[in-house]
Image 1: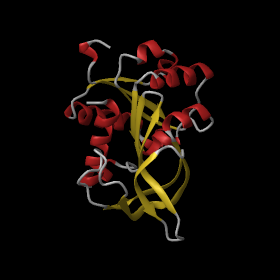
Image 2: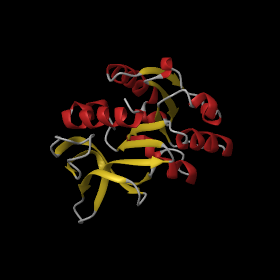
Image 3: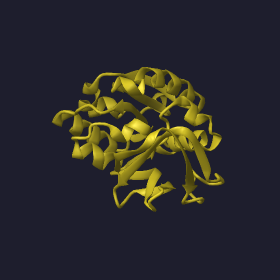
Length: 214
């Protein structure tokens, strides 16, 4: 990676239109620039089959829901992340490429079910207040949005959780390592207004910077 590539990230957007990937691509471009990244964007899945191209990035931000990957796209993405490219994302990132066991291993988790409707109010408990992403962040409440029930790899480091009415507990945010690559995910972000909650926005920004090593 050359000095000109330091801080460069790729927003990879597309998939299920209900999650408005193009709108999110535009919003994230502004946020990531403010967080210190130089931003490129692509809606072409074949970029994943080019690990040499991906290797110029410090961070990949998948803004994609559902969809399928070819074997070549799986291999290329996994190779790039294992070599040190980070992945950071939210919400639909772990409801993408559900048929790909490789993608699930890379991201460290997957959506199991949507709990309730789009107007849930729920509490997010910070589980590791010492991690650089969560240090100093209090637990917080999300208002009138979706709540995901997630499963994660046993090696993932859970940063925040939410408790359900039946006593179940689900991860909300975690970090994961795949080879030398850092992975960050947070399940909030159904609507841009989710990140009007300052703690959620801080969590996202710190997570992106941690995964991208800047």
